[in-house]
Length: 337
Image (cartoon, rainbow, N blue to C red; front, top):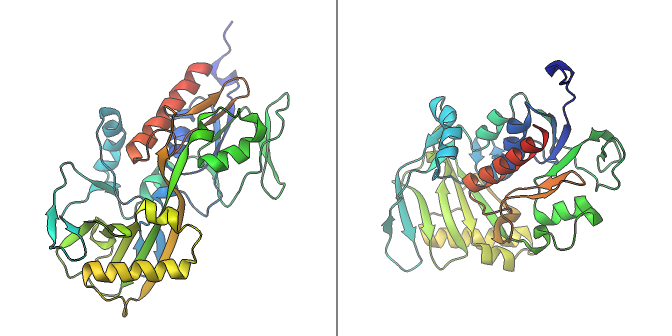
């Protein structure tokens, strides 16, 4: 005999990480499970985070995203309708030291969240149990009633049927420990790093272009962040991303030296002096984009009730990260339904 709906005991699922992966999982599992998210940072977003330095804000992770599949388009439609997601359009150029500036064509719409990139993750977090500033300790032994979850400081956080990790591979391996087989795809996945240079001027942007692809330089991409929909256009907020190769080669360098190097390249590329900039900082994304993976979207261990997905699981485009999390959620719902 089937139990009434109000008597069915839902599985408890702990999700580690409140980026697009973790929040997508939580939203798609919340009706069939009790879901709690634990995030070591101060807020949600992951690589869709925003750095605030009044009066500036910088989307120092993902700069924009595209839509190439109908499921992702359907997911975004409500956020396009309410203005949380907007198209970012304008003149995009190509920069190379010693070469003439040329126009760069975007052959598909490019989207951003508004008023900052983390706004989409904030919208997805509505109604979800999220505990920030909480770093999870490595898992040990599963008890009869599930996984006992502890913070790094030893605080008991609850007992869960499933634990799902959306952190980078090395962090996931550390959390799973010897529960993860050596032949898992996480062990074979390699990630590239990236430096984000953030520059702010307390005056409006005076040029016509909104972004630039850079060739043959430590800098790979420049976004005029303040030209995006919903941003404060009375100031100029600029984000410049390094190439992955340059970041990997300088991953252990002093941040001040990294900042000086990237600022010098930015000035050479744009002829914009940073001497009068009101804000300059640099951030290292140690695990920015996937370099190599043999996984097909997620890792799952049904016997131990452990799973993982994230930027590493297929490719690092927002759409593909969302799809990997969606596929894992569908797999888990099939187990319980």
